[in-house]
Image (cartoon, rainbow, N blue to C red):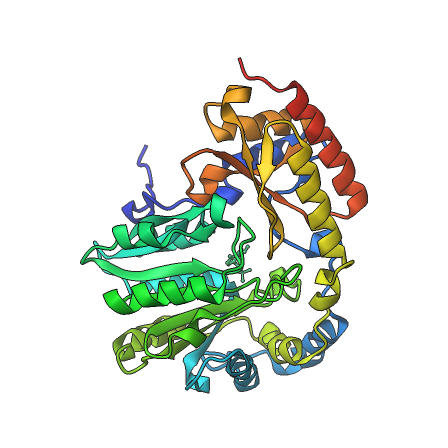
Length: 405
Ligand code: PLP
């Protein structure tokens, strides 16, 4: 048989959040089992409906949104994005600096494809949102992971970052608020990162897709607002803040020393032209979303639905034997540590498969986030309390009796 092989480019590309364990869960569902999927940060299926004005606007614009748009995106949406970042303190930006895409995902891949040559290194947090590592590897770069310190609110370890810089290091990636840890970085920490980036001429890539999903008194700072002299690329979109992940509406903004980045910017323009444009009807949602009533604030206010569920998940996870978790300050995940010795766990995947088989609950293992020290899992706290509570009861019971042979 003449076998058709995947390209060598894909050798180190993986995205385990939707990997073989999800396939196993899907097979169980097909066989008639009910699985509670706490594996993907997709708000809509858990009853987090999008704001009405966003839906209405997309429907209203549908007849006029049949053709391609400008490759970088429609004007009104790009103005809205630009103004949003001006309000967040990013200086000296224009409409040309905004690129709209089919979700942040597309922009992440595009931003790496436009930058990297074979052997170029990019500093990426561990744990990370694994698309970043995958996009670097796909773009023939090398992902070099820096440590985030669980004992310091999961903040990046600046000394570790410094120790991993080589003459090949081109860029550093931050995910703030962080998926999977829920950390929200302080201006002091961000200033330290800026200092390192300045010393070593690194481009800063900042994934800020959860910048409105903030708990307690957490404040979000755009790192680009602290680094007007560097090249910064800031990413966000509608998937989380506005709960329309299926619309695939995201963007990137280039700011700072754009003169130094002119060739890179040309590269971004070529790549965005090659795919014509992002989904046009949903580009119309962007201005309405950013300029309209911010209903996310109700969900994250002190007795809002997301806060209540975060508190429930955080408290119940910490009460489980052998499980602990740092309180998330943003996003929609708890990233919990498991005492592997106590349960005799050799691989985190085994834990996730055992829980899936015994309790019909699907989580994601820590190593899917490129964290290979310790045993962790990520739990999505999006379901309503009346679904989350029995699931957490069941997990508690599971850990009380769990021990691998
Ligand atoms: N960045 C982070 C940190 C995410 O958690 C996600 C989705 O979960 C994405 C990017 C992708 O978002 P989008 O739906 O805009 O492609």
